[in-house]
Length: 572
Image 1: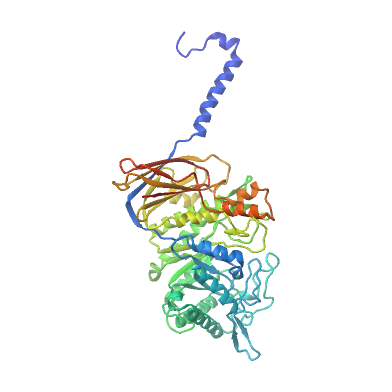
Image 2: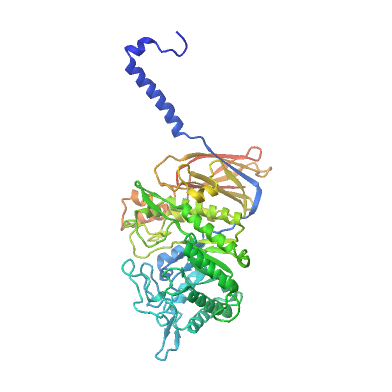
């Protein structure tokens, strides 16, 4: 019989059995090939420095300033402050909004300004002091947003307080002032008060900006009226605090042509326009801010993120900035940089926001931050940071699915993504992955099909830290990937190193998974709450190990689930 020839009797009497056996054999080969993909090779060159690591992630923001001094707000602020040695910046809406200090979704108030019977300004710093004292005690650096319009100054004050999600959000607080000089005086006295309370050195380290998204109904005025508002505010800030770090306009994503035109017009005004407050040419502008957002969707039973939409808005904004010789080197802050646009919208009504309780939120954030850094380097943009618009909401159900960092004092998985970023310190070192997608491809098409498995690594004294993530825009239930990490350039005299492996995925550093395992309690017992608190912290994958490098190299192998993140720390 010739080699590989099948006996005739098998083709006759046992043909059914043979076909079955051939099918099983082929299936086994296919399963082995499909379930064990080739490893992703990650190379880290510890002795090849690429410049200082900039903590561009350490900005956060929220609508409701009165949550700042709530018990869970204070707890979260101290946790944010502890993320890294670099101070965190906080941006909050409604610092000038009139009201009694009560909070609700997308609402807060301080009542800093009112007028007496004769129209004379009355300033009240009681609630403002409570907010900024809380920041100061936690070591937070405010990114002070000057807004919104006090009721007594608004050109259209009634109705004033909204009732989101019902009715019109953009009520009396969103209108221009009836007197720009009084607006400027309010800003001057506000900044002067904070300078006197916290000192020159402290307030000089803060950032200051005027309003929020004045190109949409957050501002019920014309573009030139916003430029006037900016001029009066910026002049007042600088008079009260010379050399203050003042910027704007915090307009919406320049991927939209109308938003890009607004940003361009604002930069033109600050460069060449006549200043409404001083009559001189131009206006002070120490940083430029705009708000790129993604566009999450729900398709075929799962969430699909919009990283390309997000990054295209960033790219267009960078191009607008670069078109002005006056502003080419001015720092750029992404004043709100998020997967979509509504932090206070719950998953029950918006299934596309289901990413918020899972590790996908963290993976998306790090994927986009990494790509923004690449775009900034490519276009020679002075990228200063990106604000994650997420904090916490008081009095809401556990894991209701708002875009927040914690729920009822329980840290959500995304916060552990920021803890990983906080462990990157010092100097960035060369790192590459065999399955890293080109930035241009992610910019144009997002991350579909093949995931982006990527790495950032830093060196700080006697320590190497590497953040590895496995990201896809599609939150489908698929297998992870085997990862093979090689670290070269370790000190020649070092005989052993301590390796720690932190993990965030569907079952590690994940309080949402623990909450579901406990039966999704809305009134957890003290014992359950303690378990949730522990699950909300960053966790090690196994115990730390002492390992011996060979020829100044170290090799690590592990599986990384889809939407999972690993932070490897090697110290000696």
